[in-house]
Structure formats: C-alpha cells, structure tokens
Amino acid sequence: MSAIVTLHAVLACELSPQPAPARLLLEREGGDALAAAIARDLQRLLPGIEHARLLLGTGLLDAAEILRPGFAAHAALAELGLRLPRGHGAVVAIGAHHGRMPAAALAPGTEFAGAPMRYLPLLIEAEAGHADTLGTRLEQVLTNEGEASAECADVLMRGYGLRLQHARYMSLTDLLALTCVQYEHAGFAAHWPLLEAALLTPARREQATSPRGARWQWTGAHVALETPRAFIARTRPPADARVHAYAAAVFELRQAAALFHAHGLPPGALDDAPGVQFSPAGVLEILRAPDARAASALHACTAPGLGIVALLLGDSDARDIEVLATPLDAAGLPLLQTTLAARSDCAQPRRDAPLAEVDAQGMPWPRAPLRH
Image (cartoon, rainbow, N blue to C red; front, side, top):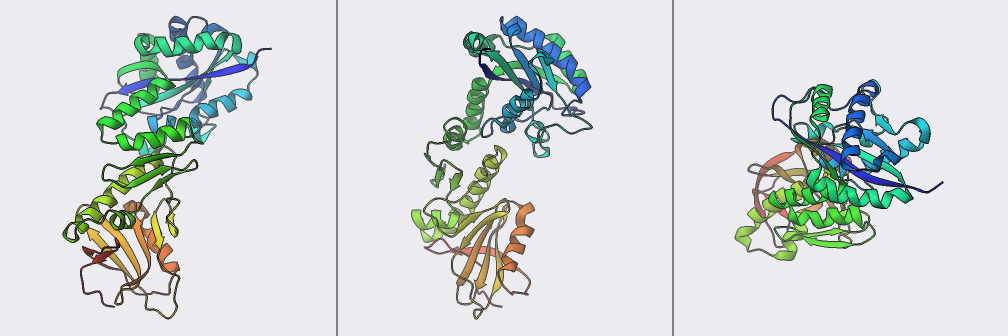
C-alpha cells in the first residue's frame, strides 16, 4: 500500500455582520450533510479527489486558530483520522458531541467572538501516487476557481444559523498569503516574519524590529519581545519624550503579545534579558533580590487610555525597586498584583498615580514624591 500524504485546505466563510451565527460548531449528525456538499464541490474543482479521503472539522475557526504551530487544527484532524479505518468512509465530518469537539484545536475560542471571517479546516488524505497531482491542482485551481456552490452555502447557512456574504475554498498557502496582506494593511507587517518563521521554519531563528523600533525575535522556541524599560534604556529618547515613549512602548507590547498569543505563541524574554519573565498576566522584571530589611510598597503608574502601565514593588523612597511589572491586559492585573504581593510582606494598599517620569535607564516613576 502506498504511503498516505496529507493536503491542507480550508473553507473560508465571510459572514454578514448581522445576525451573529446561532452556533459555531455542528454536532456529529449535523456535519454529514455539510461534508457531503463540500465533497461534491471538491469533486468538481479537483478531479481525482475521489481517490482520496476528506476529513472536515465542523468548528468555525478564526484564522489565528488555523495558523498555529504545527497547524494544530489540521494536525488534530489527521490524528483523529488515524483512529478511523480507511474503509470508514471517503468523507468524514468531525463534529461535536454534546457541544464538545473531540480535540481542543478544533473548538472555536470565545475570544474570537464577532470575527467576520471564519474557516472550516479540511484535510485531504491521498496516496502518494495521486497526491502530487492533487496538490498541484489544489494550489492552482482554488485560488481562481474556489467559489463554494450555492448548495454548500445553503447547507452552511442552515446548519450554523448564519448569513453568508461569501464562501470559497482555499489552500493553506492561500490563507497564509491572505493573512499576511491583512496584517500589512492593519499595521502588523512587522509581526508577520516572526509568525511565518514559527509556522513554516520553526527551527530557524528570525529577527524583527517593531514599528517603534523594539527588538523582536523568533528564537526557535518562542517569540521574544523587548520590554518597555529595556527599549527606553537602549534607544535613549530625550528626557521630555520618555514618558510618551514608554506609554507607547507598553501599548505596542500589549498589541504584539495579544496577536502572538492568539496564534498560540505566548511571548517570552529575549536571550540577553536575564530576570525578565513573561506570563499571560504580564511581564515581571526582577531588578534585585528580595531584602527583608528594606521597606516594601506597591505603586502603580497609570497612563491615559492604557490604565496601569507599570507596577513597582520595593523601597519607593530610595527608588530601590525589587520588581517592575507590566500588565498586558486588565484581566491579568489581579493575578499580577497577587504574584507581587507573594514576594513581599507588604500589607499596604496599592497606590496609583499618573506616570510622571521615566529615567535614563527606562524605569517609570509615578508622580513624585513617593512616600509611604
């Protein structure tokens, strides 16, 4: 028996703004009609596909959920396909059971609610003798002729309780190219080289510079981002520009962390940044060891439109700070504050004040004077 080769594709669904889809996944029974309609479309577009097996995930995913390391949604389809005998059927819909998909990578995440584009992952399993020709047609034909049929569109709208503006088949290469263009138009062109490296050449290191000049890397294991403090210390903006530059660097860091996290790439520290720890809640920069003899207080620096941009734990009178923390979003702030409180015996309430100064080393300070 010939080796089995897998080909990756998606059915891209552009949704009308209103109403929102009634559901984002189908139960196993409801996926059969959709899988059959998709199979008929692909037989028209890709002659020879009748010799292959088609697996469909019935969760409507965001592009970020498709474009994750190892192409996790397609990898999940492949793994589930291994559990089914080859004679099980030429078309297999992987649907939900009591609202749960059999693999987490096939389940739509709540954080993408309202996304106007949704994608159904398609995996084509073909014997090596057919795969080359089928793969070539997949790349050449779907780009120009991949419109879904009216029958398939009707099944989609009825099955998910949604209104469609457009539906077409795309190869994974097409989706990568489309996402690259969309990110460029949205101002995220600098993010793409790191994401592309993580997806396509994960063993290769990649360097990038953010739009504001921060250092970014794909290390071969994770995306590494420069902290606002390190950015200010390295670029040395004029003293009267540091507060604005620091706040802007925090905003850019939050954007980048959110985008990479959506693609399953939680960010980490640069190789030359000892003491920097990233977590979903925020970034910790350990500046000195704990000192039981030193006074400890927790101060927060705020900036208009950004909320708290820095938490300072340490001796504020002497400007001797043990930890600088940067919240990445409001939801993670309580956990970040709990983490800091666990490092000290400070029982005083947090004190908030506007960000008023950033020194030449990139340290942010709230409005002076700082007193207990």
